Length: 287
Image (cartoon, rainbow, N blue to C red; front, side, top):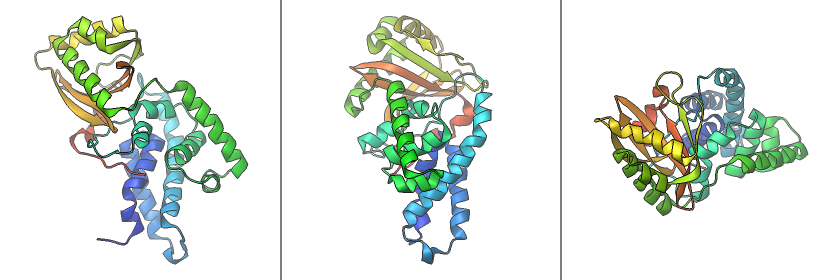
């Protein structure tokens, strides 16, 4: 047991950085940078260690996010967040589960760095506006305006989804079965008419480089997977939501979905092998 606030809040700091960056590898780097700065601090003068550590981590994540912008502009195909394997009870907070979902992180990627920092700190971690203002170097009034714009931006772009775990599990199970058999009608039955597939291969493995739209096109595209004799699927909690792992032709795909009204509205398929290192161990996400 330790009394070091950094150790106590390490999972929280990782979650903050991951929400900001969508990359577990970069989030881990931010956590390490936060530790180095924390080690040099005169802790006797720190009144609220948790808030102080979150402030350091957010600033480091902001700096890294700005440096990553150009790299992501040059990314081959669609960019999706790095998926995390989570335990069924790892994100018991339903609101938190939605906020760390692949669907939400993909929307957050459309925000500017400061907007994303403000949104994450306020909407996910309920940080007071004066503390957020200090982190991003803005006035409290300006920070409130940024938060309002960010909320409107996210609300306009987030996919239709219901965060009901039992419903998602049922729909994902039907989807897995349909993918395994390659039955087009079964796939059509579980897909929303306007379903969208976004795949991320990073230019390293085969993946659609633009989104696929519409249940007919998506069903026929997915049905092709059943032609491979080595196809296997296994349920997995991806970023706090029911999803599954798909092994095919020597490659791995992490599949996350958004569900509304009993049908899948979005399918996120992460195939870039550089993003799949954490599929073999559970990550603890906290707020």
